[in-house]
Image 1 (tube, rainbow, N blue to C red):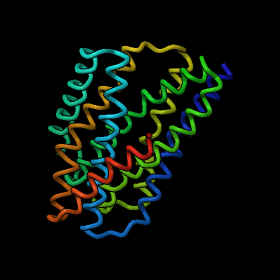
Image 2: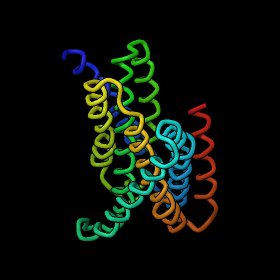
Image 3: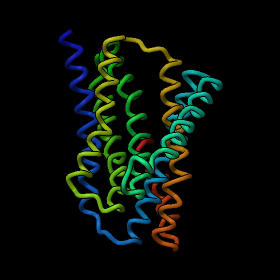
Image 4: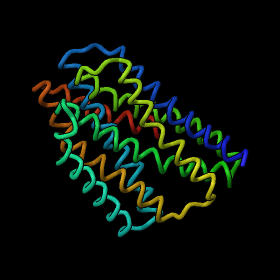
Length: 236
């Protein structure tokens, strides 16, 4: 039982530290429409990389075509449902993209936690290395969430808090993964493709249009391509 709590602590540290550092870094970025448009594009490009090279390939490999497509469809359906009901919940409609992006990152972090918990339990030598890799991987995710919050002029304290909260599912996932041991590949596939579906919809429906609204020039397009390339560099 002691090992489970150590694994869970690792998961929370990986999730919270990574996204928290990313959220904090955003506070040092200058607040102009052109720069923020560029950074939103950067966020979209990086997120698209995560979907196309990380989430969906792993989902297809673990669960096959049909379970992965089901996960994508469910993820998109959830975001559309939330989007349809969000105006009555939020006083500030401009917060919609930030909330949806936060949900998608949190959903994405849960299966990562499952993988982390399982690896600690079944391959103890791999656990610390995977923890470090996930922590570094979560930093740009925290930054990606924080940029839309910065666009909406959210206070620095709340930006850091929201960034940290998106990392919490990593700890929850690591507890479940550590408790159950080897998790079903189909379950992980559904989780990954579900997260991929939510991100894909948010990129197309929120991030790219908002980036173009902030600044009509090429800043967001350049940022989008650069974000995609940065993802390739970080992961390969």
